[in-house]
Length: 326
Length: 297
Image (cartoon, rainbow over all chains, first blue to last red; front, side, top):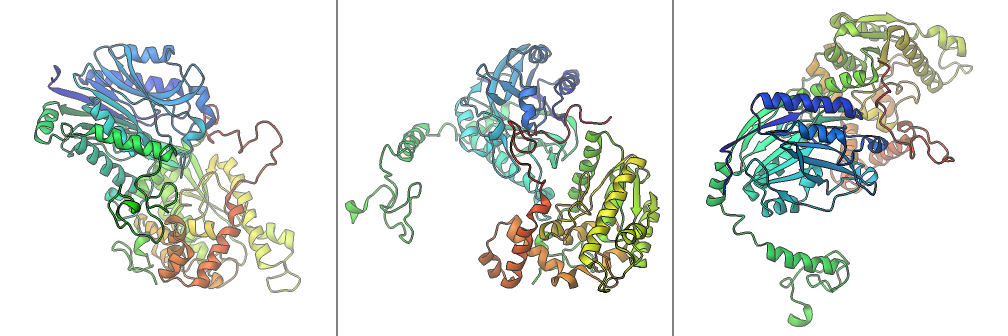
C-alpha cells in the first residue's frame, strides 16, 4: 500500500560542516531545516557527520552525543511535520563511539543507524576511532514509504542495499563524507570518485527498484576535498537529480512515489528474490570459513579461503569432489 | 616511450596521456583548498617565493585565482649567480597578475656565511651545500615576510621532485600548505597552460638555477615525461618493477628511481619523536591541524 503522499518533496543539504564545531553545525542544521520547511519539503537529508565534520581523530570523543542529548532533542523538535536524516558521533552507554545517522520525524527520534563498515585503508582510518554497528533495519516513515539508512562505506557492500530493500525500504538513503580523488581526464566529470559512486548508485536503484538518495558533503578538511555531487536515482536506475560538484547548497527534488509501484510491477526483481537461497549458502560459507565444516567448493589442495589450487584448473562442477567423479 | 600529448596541451611540452588531468576540476579543488586552509587558520593572505620557474609560477596563478592578486605577496629571492632570465620571468608573472612583490637578494646572507669563493674553487663549499643553504635562506625570508605581510607561506613543490627527493628539507619544502604537491611535473605543465602561465616559463627547461646552464633533466639524467610516467605506474597504480619493465621502462632507470624514492622517505615525514610518555604528539595524540580554538582569528 502506498501512503498518503503522492510526491515526496525532499531537500538535500549538501553542506560543509565545520570540523569539531558541534554548536555551529547545529545552528546550520536548524537554518537548513527552516529553509526546507519554508519551501515545502517533506524530507531533509544531511551528510555523514554533518554535525561534527569528518576528520575528527581524537576529537571524536569530544563531540560525541548520547541519544538522549538535549541538542539532539532540539533538532528532533524542529521536525514537526517533517522528516530529517542527520548524522553525528553517537556514544553508547558502554562508551563506544559510532558514526550514526538518525531519522528524526514529527519531533521524535524515529530510528538510528550505526555505520556498519568502517573503512580503514588508503586515506581512511575510521576503525581506529570508531566502533562498527551491528544492526541493519529498514523502518516505516511518516512519508508513507519504508526508509533504509546507510552511511558512506556501507554502500560499498552489496548486502546493505539488498537487505534494506528486502526489509521494506523503498527509499535507500546513503549519507556520505566522500573525499574526491583521481582527476584523470578520462573520468566522467573528471573525478574518479564520482564515476565509481555513480555506477554503484544506479546499480542499486535498479536492482532494488527503489529510490536511492546520496547526500555527500562538500568543503575541505586537511588535504581532503569532499566533492558533493549528491544525487537522487529513480527506481528504474535513471538519474532524477544531480547536485553540482563542490558547491554548497540546499537542493530540492520531487520523488513521485507511483514510480516505485510502476517499476516493481514492471520489473519484479524483489518479488523474485530468493533470500532463502542466500541464507542457506551464506550459512554454509560462514561455517566453512570458520573451519566448522570442510570447504565443499574448493579443490582438495586449495589454500584456506581459495577455491582453486595453484596450477590445477577447475575441471568439474563446483560441489562435486574428485573422489566422486574422479 | 611516452604516450601522445593530450589534445588540450600545447606543443610547448609533452603530456603522457595517462597523466592528463581534468584541469577544470583541479582548479576548483585547489581553489577551495587554498581558501579552506586560510579560513581554518584565520588568515586572508599568502606569501610565495617566486623563482621564475613553472612550479612557483603556477602556484602564483592559482593563488591569485583563489583569493585575488591583492592578497598575494610574491617574494623574488635571487642569488648573484641566478639567471637574469629567471628574474625577468618572475617579474612578468607579477606584472600580469598585478600582485604585490618584493626582491630580496640573498647573496649577502649566503656569501656572509660561505665567503665569496665561487663554485669550482677548491676552497668553496660544494654546490650541494650552497644550494641547500640558499633554499633555507629563502625559507627564512619567506617566514619573516609571513609576519610582516600577515600571510601564510604557500608551498610550490611538485609530486615528482617530492617523490625522488629533489628538495631541500626545511628549505624549499617548508610551507604552511601545498596546493600542487600531488601533481607530477607533466601535470604542472598541463595545469600551467590551462591557467595562462606565460609561454616563456612553460617552454623553458626546468632548473634549480644554482649555476648557469643547469637543468633538472641534464643533472638527473632523465626526462620528466618518462620519470612521471614511471612514478605514476609504480606508485599510483601499484605496478611491480617487473610489470613496469614489461611496460617498456628501462630496468636500470626503474631501480635507480626506486632507490631515490625510498631514500627520500625521511624528507616527506615529520621527524619521529622518541616514545616515552603516555601520550605522544603524532603517535597517539592525534588531532587535525586545525580544530576549534586553533584559528588565530
